[in-house]
Length: 171
Image (tube, rainbow, N blue to C red):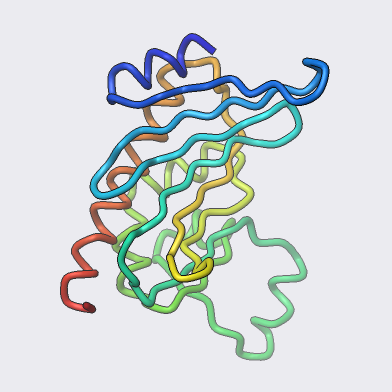
């Protein structure tokens, strides 16, 4: 995981390789300081890449974006609302719900929508866990490609910047 180490060094972060058991199961973790927390990349041999960030302040915000399937279309027939971005290709592929429609739409910049469309994303969410909101992206990318890892980092930073200003008027 040389690319993880390179990304860590460029962003004053730390990467580590965790071996569980008799070296048959490996887990990689990268922590990059950002704003008042850390962006954490976690992957192992069995799961897709997870990128997360814990907000230190209570936001009172939540959203969930995931690939839409047939079962998601049934509730919509009965009036269940989802957030619509206006990007037909994106709206047809992803189901979007959230507590603040304007925030979700501002997060879903064209670069982020394109990224989600180009990659195999199981979900992108901001959810309350214990007393904090956690921003999390679960995505299948080539973690051995430095440019792929750097792109996800840049998009994650951009998303955090969009969410952070909203905390100043909600606090």
